[in-house]
Image 1 (cartoon, one colour):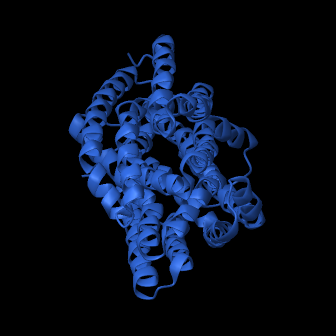
Image 2: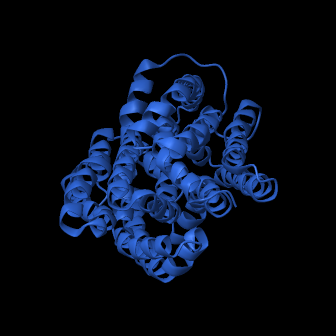
Length: 443
């Protein structure tokens, strides 16, 4: 049964609506996870370290897609709530076209930036060569990957979350199958893993262009548009938290890698990469929920339905709390099999990965509330508060902690840094939620 944004959401209906977005985010995270799994086991830990070292740069340059997707979908959903259908479609079309053009320009520039960035991150010799090779291959599909991130949000706004899910599943399965074929069977090494990801990202980014570009039953359609400077500016400010999250995460992950190179060399970077793969999947549950529920919040905010805003907020906090405890328990249980799966061929690296993940997993008890808090303010079209939460969470607190804690605790300080930073951010998020309760009436 089709669920509309205008409905009252029970737990069952809310979970049915957001579930496709959660799975979409999980499959998006699988791109790098599968690459890393095959590279580690079939190419070696040096190539594996190269993938992990250059990945923060690749995720950082794709941040435009996250910004336009989340910031733009909040505006479009609010416009739909105000029953301005034609305006909503004009805004949607303009934002998609800008993403495509911007993606092509950024991809070309990034081809030249991969080498100096990899050197800045501490790569040299074979590690540097592998970083350049893998990074430049993934730049080929960068515009498609950015469009994929935009459409993840707009599929939900168009009340087509299940179609968005099918697109991402097909893209993810394509990546996995080609990774097996190119790396494990044909022994194409690191280039094979890169081209497998490129193929998956092209499917995820280009199919929605054809879908929204033809006549369909969706609320949203690609068509003629005009340049709406005010809407573009509002999109950028509204989605600035997501831009900040991705850019800051890239900077911080690079800093983590540099710290780990100092304390444990390539083994430290490889161990951190393995932990990040599980982190991508776990936090994608929270990001998926935030993406899936945000258009509902924006719609009811635009419709001035305060009772439904309260309903959505309270149900969301309870769900996130339940998932947080569950993910922490799961993380403790899978630490050994996870380390065995990725780096079981090296005993020292195995021990480093297992102990590091068990300390890192305390962050899962907290980060979901911060992710949702930031996304909630984005959905309410308050990009400033959303950006401030993301800025403190992903940049200020994490940089401060990862620079200071290792001085006291050594490499264990690196593993504990994220949890401490998330705890500090939670204090800020909670303060904003209390202070803004009378403005938006969600409590």
